[in-house]
Amino acid sequence: MRQHPRTLRLLGSLLLVAMTASVTGAAPAPAASPTPLDRVVPAPASADPGGSPYRITRGTHIRVDGSRETRGVGEYLARILRPSTGYRLPVTAQGAGGIRLRIAEGPFGAEGYRLDSGRGGVTITAARPAGLFHGVQTLRQLLPAGVERDSVQPGPWLVAGGTIKDTPRYGWRGAMLDVSRHFFTVDQVKRYIDQLALYKINKLHLHLSDDQGWRIAVDSWPRLATYGGSTQVGGGPGGFYTKADYKEIVRYAGSRHLEVVPEIDMPGHTNAALASYADLNCDGVAPPLYTGTEVGFSSLCVGKEITYDFVDDVIRELAALTPGRYLHIGGDEAHSTSHEDYVTFMDRVQPVVAQYGKTVVGWHQLTGATPAPGALAQYWGLDGTSAEEKERVAKAARNGTGLILSPADRVYLDMKYTKETPLGLSWAGYVEVRRSYDWDPGAYLPGVPGDAVRGVEAPMWSETLENSRHIEYMAFPRLPGVAELGWSSAASHDWERYKVRLAAQAERWDALGIDYYRSPQVPWPAAGGR
Ligand code: TNX
Image (cartoon, rainbow, N blue to C red):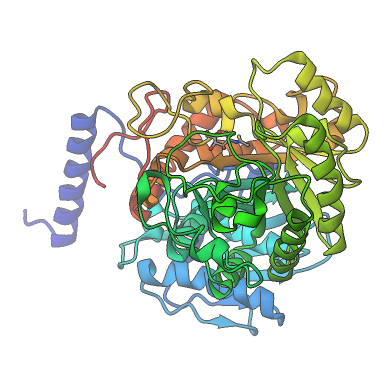
């Protein structure tokens, strides 16, 4: 009997499926099964699957309400989806169905959202554009990883049916980039911003000055950038951001709903400034530029009036460039400043920040002086930090100083994963993926009231890091874990489940060209098909 050609094709594919299954020893995944709603990093507050999936097709529209910012989120989504789907995906204000971004009152807070998916469409609802933007990040992760590629992929583009309701645990979910030890270009910073946005990070802290380089143009003290920015660790050419460059970083971060927090580290970590202006030195002699990696040898001259003219000018110009609320004044490792001078300096400088309309952030040594009302302290101690130092921080927290947690032996992204890691430092120990994820910011420091903890931040110091590949290798896969600590509830914390969700991200990093460390602690999908 002659077989109908369609039956033959069907038999052929069944045979192929059976063979694949016997080769891999596993049942083949149904070709079109969409990603489950809860397979997202950071874990959403709730995910209720149900109903039919939505399929993005050639006819899909992205519908936005009238506001410019909502339209901006719609355009951002379209720019992600168009290259890989090959669809037009017009962003329109009219019509129904498709992907809808909607601003509405609701229990969303400033950054939360709700995502409803079903046969007729996907609707993301939020009170603010930032919530829509975070909802879009979730939607990305619900689509196949191929959606991240910049050439047309086969699809199908299915989003599982159901509802996600999501809102962050903390308002401060930061990442710091040290652009002083090695300089990174505007494009390199933008690339990192895009990676941070994937995981709903909302603060980009830029460490703009240190012993090895001053990286931001200051009109009233031009040599800071032109001379103080002219080298870096290892003696390379360094660089600095013009004011236009810096504004472009701020604009780009804003378009990804990140707030830039600029840091000028004082009174220590200031060799680049001291080298640029002899008058800033107590002895009136400018030291040479520095390209090594020691810390703690430099200090502004606390007893000289010109120091405060300098601080006033720098803070004024930087505040004027910064739409965000915060200005970080450093204050760490001031080993060459006496305690008395440190207190004098911080007492004088914090009001200058307030005078130019900003809120002080400082490294936690600030709690050894008197933190200004409303100031935030960034804790970077270790398990082994003395009980006395921890108590000083806890006491400040009880007195109203907010805390950002960046424990160095958990979330310093420049720490080596193991002794074999080719990049990074190890003064705080080796920090494998589990260690960076497996702690609770809300219960980390004894004696700290829960509401004093404003969030978490992952610093990336760049003594050993010279390019985007280096940054990515150290950030991935630890950064998503820190993002999850900042976003997801303590109740959802579970390494065994987290590591599976994390492993599923690797395909996405491959599609985006993000380098990462293949930690043996994470059950990565088998290589191949990449
Ligand atoms: C400590 S933590 C520093 C930085 C270094 C970093 C290297 C802190 C506030 N200061 O100056 O770059 O360690 O891991």
